[in-house]
Image (tube, rainbow, N blue to C red; front, side, top):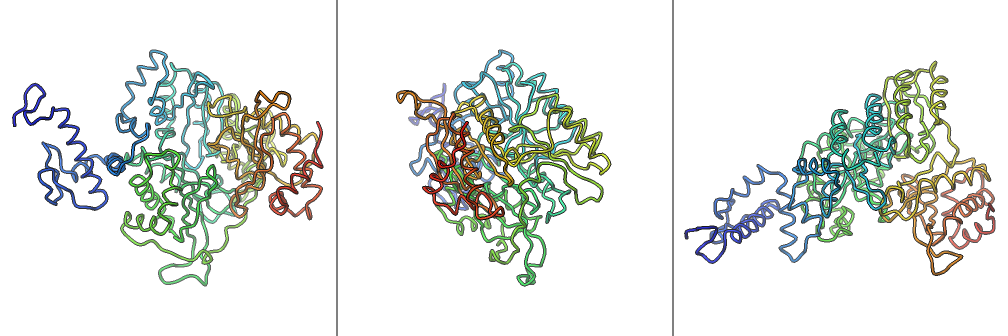
Length: 617
């Protein structure tokens, strides 16, 4: 039938026809993605083409646009009665990669994004953090936490020109810049590109900074260098468009089995280096170093990554990780943000089915082995991210610099860059413990490097409390946070250190909201902010925390148990000090770790013990 002035004599407008064609194409692409035959639009014949108007065949569409996999997944979930959440609709309506002119226009007008554009702008690493601040935060990307001195110096200058003159180190061995005016957003992004920092996908529903063991290549205890794998994964991601726009955010980590843990068991995909036992070797599984393949870590939802029973050679890791993401793209929930992480797909399917789908994606069966076929991961050292330590290279050392709750000023950034060049070779590493390492310092330069660090107002030493003190941004820069966690963390540390002499390391994690960016559930002591009843006025609320104990990672893996609910912050430092004093007074021996003590004693007994030894102000 003929069409004139946008109307069809067949009863549908051109707009309606286009919609129906698009829906039919999406359904056919969904079937093609799942390996099912495609239903032709001309009468239901089963073949591999879509004959609807002049549209391309689905096979051609998939070949020409790998991102079609996302639209197909959306269509499939809508076809069975689901309703896409607002973020999925926004991604469907506008490709964030195509927003550059729009973002430039906003910058020129001094405007911040509105509505779902706030979400889409996060693809570029830019987070509009109102009402906490009327500004952007920019999240960066440093695969494996590795950063060169010239990049750190350039970031210091960029922070002075376009941001707040400081940087925050995060729990993904990464950096954030804050207090960025609307007018400086494009200047910041182009400045990052000039520094070879690629941060596209650093926020929103994408794969975040890929982490690795921070001492890769210099740790005398590591089983394998993982920095090269983190970089390979990073470059794979940024060169595959289809791996953006996932159902929710996604984390990947590589642990090399050395002295500083990468916390890979808190990631969606964790690769843990292990050594195959000699007696477990076969013709197809030779003795050597492999990676245990784990899935589904999300400690904010009280779950660690769990072993799949798969052992991977190092050269298989990136391919298998990409296959996992592909399966997640196709089947992750796009109708409920609270159930859209990988954990929930694993809960729904089970590991056997999920691994089977991954094997279909890679086109072969993956190598399986019992968990006891490998030697246990060597124990990490909870304080080797601070202080002076020898490297595997004879005559060289690295120094772990303490950044107070992860923050450093632009002058300190420039100073650290300079001393890493003067006393080392410009090789710096960020860690998940919110601090920084400077590598390759010769023995004869160690004392000078220590003095240079102190001159910057920083330190290479830390108490047992400060070495494991972790805090998210808090209400000073995040709209979700219920308390100023960074300043609260420093208050707690000051209070405890004035009253106690801790002789063992203890990790204290403060997080501002349910997103648990500081991973409060895995701290020896974990605190999550909440509005709590004001003891002086029951009709009012004040900033406070819920307090958890006994969390851990790796060989100490466990989710913390709630010890106190609804503590006003004014009471928190004394409660923490009382808890630590109870440990010192009641541990079986100095060899009993704090986490073992808190797991040995029942919660009611621990609460009573803690209150009985409350350390007063």
